[in-house]
Each structure stands twice: as structure tokens, then as C-alpha cells.
Image (cartoon, rainbow, N blue to C red):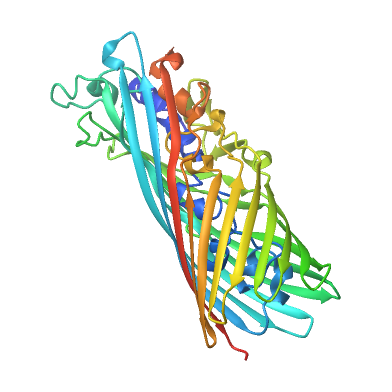
Length: 482
């Protein structure tokens, strides 16, 4: 398949202006907006307790889920325990764009608000092996869910009428217009399974964890006529990674107690390289142009460093975490390799497709307070600040908007009865920074075309903004020792 190029000029032109958007769009969509609860903001709120603390955990510890955050803290959870629950995250964002041109028929604008809901369950267990060695296990969903745009206005990539561009015969005025609508549907999932242990050496505790990462990604792109009711055949694309995408990762941690009430913690989470090889189809719903091919693509989840300090007494615990995530080294740009050099772009045929994400390194600070009011009731407060990882050069009208958030406030409580603890945590992120997309960003370049070798990049502008993110986590903890 694809051993020679199509002889039909119309097909080559159509690939020129339709395939190019598909690849650059896909490469910027792996991290979907529903991933915010963990990866997007840089917080570590896997369970209900840490959700209420804003993600504080590095030196504080005391939960079985520590095996996935700082395994050196496993010794702080006394006896045998399990915990389980889930997080629901609601996201809301807005995208605005506008295309101006000397031809009034090409002028358009969009304002589209998007909402999304993601659910992320978790389970963790902690078992003492000896007086100095503790074992932990965890299974949890890092993030995932649908995202994209829904029927936003744009012009045909060639500037031709819909009938000329797509080689179809829609009735007037729909077929005579150059206006179309574009839809992208992105779905991703990332699950982690962790096995780790901690060993005590006096005041020092060391821990290590091996992670198995499972991920998948799918993407669908469709074009519609100006009414948004008729899907244009032969202009759709579908991508799907393999069903079983596995990669190993690791976590190293330490915890040092200066006194009985003050300690320091550090954790390092390694880079994870997900082999998102798969297949995609081009020319969907049109047998004349339909093709199917394999694609190789590796996506790296960046390494993360956390340093924390915690004060702990019988009734009050508080601490501070400092985090650093090295996005820029791994996600400044990404490359996708096709089986055959059929890809047609303004720069010629190629088997390699590059995309510029331009993610920035992220630093953050987290503050958390836990107060045990009685033997039954515990309440928590937290605050987290992270520098945004999205820049103007990496802005995208359909994804990555949640990465513009900086502030998160949180609260939670636990009710303890017998061996059970019922835990609730909630967080809220107010509207983020309004990001004006750069003229040289992938999104702007893809929407600045209006014909073969005819560009109007200066006429296109867009901006994105996260309006709000709300997270709610409910969990239960069960102790098996008196």
C-alpha cells in the first residue's frame, strides 16, 4: 500500500490541504483536557486526602497511595491498610478565533465554550513486611476522556467551493460556498500500576517503585458543510493507537526525620516513553480515496522532581512541597513516522511529520494543613500554584487550554468510625490566563491557508482560556490492624 503516489491532481491537492492539519492536530492532542486532575496542573491529588490538601504529600505521607508519589513514606502508614475511591473532574474552557481577508466571503469568526467531565478511580494497599520494610501497591487512572472542537467555522483549505474542493455535488448555496465546519474528537487514557517498597535506616527512609503504564489514544476529524448537518465524504480521518500500549517507569524517594515532628522528603519520577504506534485511515466514507496505513509514534511523559517539608504532631500537620516538571526537554516538538512517504505538505512528500508543542518547564508550590478535631473528624485545607506550561507559540485552539491554569484551592474532611475512614476532597481552579496564540503556532498556520501557495497568516488570530476546573474526590480507607 502507498508504493506510488496518486496520479489524480485533485487528490494530491486535497491531501496537501487536509492531511497537513490532521497530523499537526493529532500530535498536539495527546494530553486531553480531562487529564487536568493530575498531570495538567502538576498536582499529585490521587486520593481524597491529598485532594483536600492541594496535592501536598512529599514529606507528609501517611496514605497507602504514597507508593505512587514518594514510596519512602510507606512506613508512615501504620499496619495493613487499603484505600479506594474516585475523582470526578469538570472542566470548562473557551476558544475564540477570527479570519479577516480582502475577500468578504472568506471572513469568519468562532466563539465556542467547551465542557468536559472525567472520572478517575484509584486503589492502593500497604503491607508491612518487617519492622523496617514496607510494601505498597496501587492502581489508578491518571487521566483521560474526550476533548476537541465541535463544528467550528473555517474555509476550505484551497479557498475553492465545497463542491470543487471535495469533488462532490451539494445543492446551492451549500456546495457553492467555501465555508465548512470542522470537528475533532480526541480520546485518551493513561493508567498506572505501581509496586514499591520502603526501607528504614534510622531516621532515613528510602523507597523505590516500579510502574507499569498503560495508555491509548484515538482521534477522529470530520468536515461538514456550512449548515453542520452533512458530513463531507472523503475528508475525514481516524487514528487509533494499539490496544495494548505498555511502558515502564520508576519512582525513587527518600524521607529524613530531623526530629519527631519535622521531616524532609524528596521524590523523583522518571520519564515514561509510551510507544503510541497504531493505524490511521484517510479519506473516510469515500472508497475512491480511502487508504489505511500504520504509523510509529513515541510520546514521553516528562520526569518530575518534588521536594517537601512537613510538621507533624498528634492533632496538626502542615507542610510545603516544591515541584519541577521537565516538559521542555521532551515536549518542545514531537515527530510521527509513517510507513511510506506519501504525506504531502507545502514542503513536499515525506514520511516524517513534525509538530511544535513548545511546552515550557513547570515549577510549583503546594501548601497544606490537616487538623484532627476529634477522634472522628479531620479537616484539610490546601493551595497549589503552578507556572503554566502553555506558551503563545504552543497554544492550540482545541487542546492544552487547561495547561494555562495556575491557582488551585482545595478543602476536605474525613469521618473515622472503627476501622473505616470516609474521605472527601474538593478543589477549584479559577479562570486561567487568556492566551493569545502566536502567528507562527501550528494552529494559526493551519488556519491561515486559503489556497495553493496562497496564505493569509496575518489575517488569522485566536485566543484560548480555561474558565474553571472543579474536582471532587470521594474515597474510603480500611485498616486491618487495631
